[in-house]
Length: 221
Image (tube, rainbow, N blue to C red; front, side, top):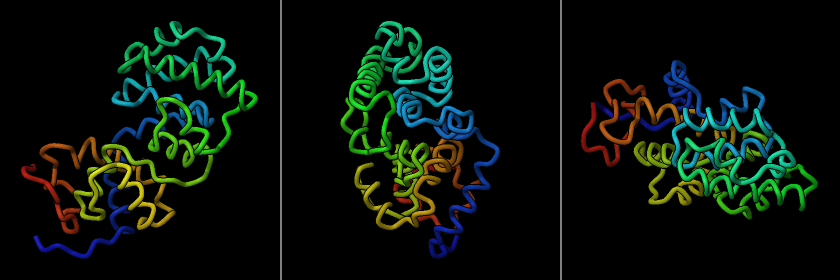
């Protein structure tokens, strides 16, 4: 197939339509359900690390049914949090991280997590992806949240050429139109799960086949 010039506006339009039938990315789903504070979404993002969205959503909802604010979470024990989020990966470690974040938010910020990326990054267990997603979704301060899907797909497209998610974040924030900084994660998570999968991507069903360089694709459907 002849490859056309890569048009990011057309790409986003096509991906938006392609993912319409699929479940939303987990943090965006929680935001739409009303779990939209910076603290709630940061906790959800910690839970989501190396955990399927389906599991993250279940345990995050269960935790928020018990405690939604930093003060409420800080009042719990680490063991209580651990038992609530037990189905996610590394629950004991994450329970300790979540409790410590809640305690620091109460002690250092009066119980309300500020929309400050440096503050979020200072917490144990919080990396650039989670901080950027919270800033974009909860704080209306757009940053690019790069997870495994965003990193893999934008490199596969040939839109960036990077080796690490951190470098992908830098390249996208230098190149991607700012209006797409938050939406790219919202779209590429379901796109990466259902169409542009890690192995044997569904290239024959992909609406971007005429523009994608298919970098690194060795076998596809």
